[in-house]
Amino acid sequence: MAGAGALLAAGMMPARAAALRLMSAARLGGSDGAAAWRDGALSPVMLPGRGHAPTRLDGGKAVVMGRRPGMFGAIVDADDLSAPPRIFAPSDGNRFAGHAAFDGKQLVTAEFDAATVAAVLAARDPATGAERTRWNLGGIEPHEVLFDRGRLFAALGGLIKDGGVAGPAFNPDGIKSEVVEVDPKSGAVLARHGLGIQFASLSLRHLAAGRSAMAVAAQDQDLSETRPLVALLTDALTPLPMPSAREADFRGYIGSVAFDSSGDIVAAASPRGGVVGFWSASRHVFLGALPIADGCGVAAAAESGMFWVSSGHGGLYKLSPEHIEAQWHADAGFDHHLITV
Image (cartoon, rainbow, N blue to C red; front, top):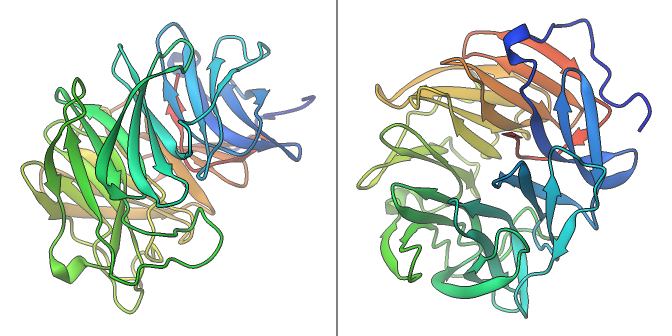
């Protein structure tokens, strides 16, 4: 793509970050793909359909999962995006839920039964994507999966339909949303974590591992009042305080969550609200928010308290809870999730 990723004068890349590379699924010149961005230059790769979340693999590789209901996963060479991606399909009768996790040995993909929306995890060969085994989770509508502390965690959104599937959310018996802990060797469910009945409208969707807790981000199916959209998981789920809509309006939706490099500051992005909010995990306090139009992808920067954020309008930002330090523009519409590779 000629001219892709032109650097704007709004900020300059720090010299020590010159080797840093960001990757996201993206819309590129009217086509679906993924892109790696470094030093103001964008390297694209085309995909069979709309991608969602990328996950780092070993050897400079990454996997980009198709957006739910996804029909492909794509293993790409982040060092050479001109190389054709290796494409693999979901398990028979399943659809990909847009997310995967890798622990250095196995690639695990979040999937759901196309007919029942039942949650399934598939353990795969990280080199080829070939399925090794699959595990049923005993819930519906899986979303983000994550390895942490020797266990595998999966967020079950608990919705029959969600924003990634045409039509409104539909749950005649209410939402049964939870985060499940899974034994990564056997697939056995070791624990289930949910919120109280007062938070029954929340669908738990995104995960991030911190220093001493996991951040869990939610989507609220009832906007009649402001409810907490970020919680911390230790032995149980503890909601973090939410600002008023006047202070920072997340419009009931968090699309991506991350910890900073210290493992203490949580950043949660809402593309619907056009805002990125920040919390201290150790102090359980809201630190503030910054406006980012259609901002959603968020990843830790090398410096403590700093983050990278991408937007659907092609914006790339380096920021802290207090201010935007630098910003660029790329010729791409970045999807919801962002990683460093």
